[in-house]
Image (cartoon, rainbow, N blue to C red; front, side):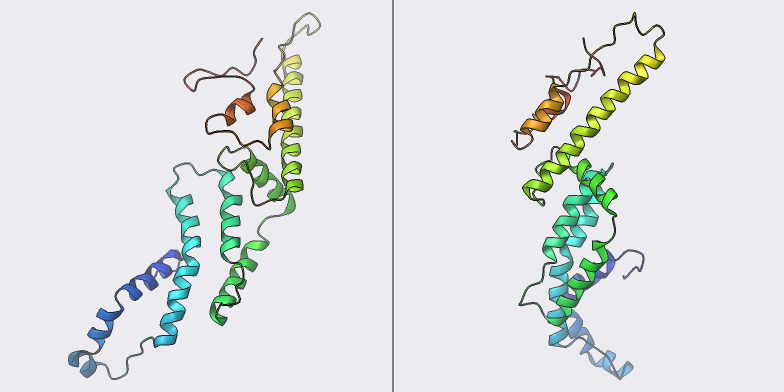
Length: 222
């Protein structure tokens, strides 16, 4: 059944039709149906090929929507990798038929202008902080470096804001020793971000210390 509010249902309907094509043709050829319906429009071989190509083309879009829907808590860091996957799958090919070429062009035009420059920068920074996608393979070297420099600057600003807030909250700040936040994580983030670490090691860079997930992580350490 095609549901207009869920475009995936159109893809599922096409897939189901192609799977059951022989059974549908046999049913339409039965005398009873021919007797009750004089004119029955069916897909000819050219339209069948177009339907098969559309199913292949739209699979990445279904993958993207399924990933987001299946996540109990989908994160914003997924947006850039999924968008990149869609753009790569929609790249023009000289073997594309007219219908497929037009569909690819329409999809690329639809997703190309969805985010302003500031919003896209924010999405890239969120992706860079996700250990699964921090390599940012969709960017060149200069673009990756710019993303990590922005992350470093924002982390430093957050650190400064925390110190400022501490001073406002604690009376007699001249006599109070303000705990220093370790900045080894920031240094490693700026100097070693190019080295892809084994799984489970990324958080050690961000936190700047060894830790266990079962331990409570304090915002300040002596």
